[in-house]
Length: 225
Ligand code: CA
Image (cartoon, rainbow, N blue to C red; front, side, top):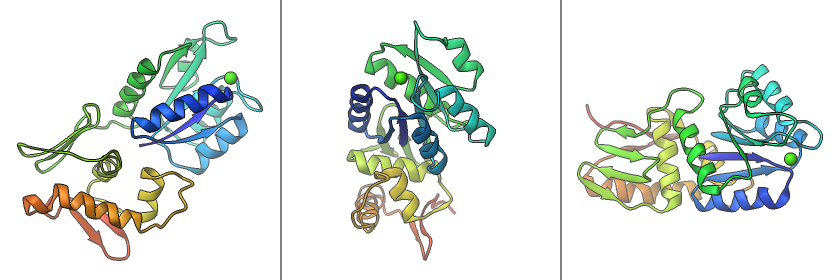
């Protein structure tokens, strides 16, 4: 899951980035309004955490621009009780939820997870393909009765493939959503991790859920005929 934080308080922004990265998210940060809008338009995020008072362009203007362009990315607003705006404004103007500063990280994470579950379009709380089940909230993966241990990166890769089950997904898209936007290492890392994943979710069960689509990338699909 890939997130954008738009926040001009540098310490808060980097604390959020650290915390969310530790939770397995891929996190980009923008520190000004115009940069935040630019990144939100250029990249495809699973959610945006958006401050209101920002240099250059307010959070509200950013929402207006995004929604006017029919970008429905889920937005969690950071509001301040003593601010010029209040929570009702945030929701009126197209945010999906808000937390009021100062907030605890635990509360923000819970709201964010709820938002990701609801998503921009309805998404199932639990992802399932055949007997392979991934629960994003509980952070568990099972195949039938067997629970499967994945590293955070393997989990993020599987979650992304399962959210797009049945579609061919390119290595570039995978890299973009599961690794950092600024990742400059070898793109073959995707192949390597797909291999790790297959050895955990497919090989022991004699399945081929993660299929190679020649020239296109990968597709996670039902193997039931
Ligand atoms: Ca601010």
